[in-house]
Image 1: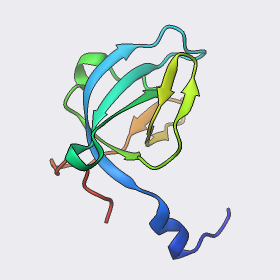
Image 2: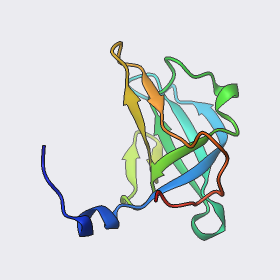
Image 3: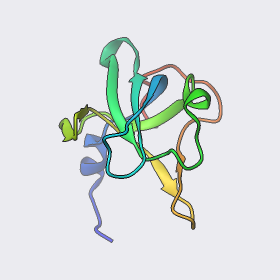
Image 4: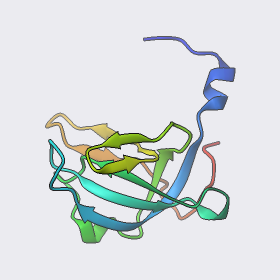
Length: 112
C-alpha cells in the first residue's frame, strides 16, 4: 500500500451526487450502465459508466446518492466520455456495492 500525504488526499474531490439518468451500455466490454449524476450548481451534471449491473436495476438507481471523485480528467470508455468515478466496494462474488450517504445531503457536498 502506498502512503500518501494529507496534502495529496486534499486534492481528491470526493463529492456526493444524485443519479438522475441511467441507460444500458451495450457497447461496454463488461456489463455496465451509463449514468448522469447531479453534483449541484457548482459542479453540475457529470456522466460516468459503472459496472454495477449485477445487483442494481436501472429504476432503483434513479434518485440514489453516490460518492464520486469529480476531479479526474475525463476518460473515454468506448462511446462514453466518463467525467467522474463512482465509488464502490467489491463483494466476494465480484459485484460492486455503491458508496453513498445513509441520509440525504446536498448534491456537491464534499467528503468531510
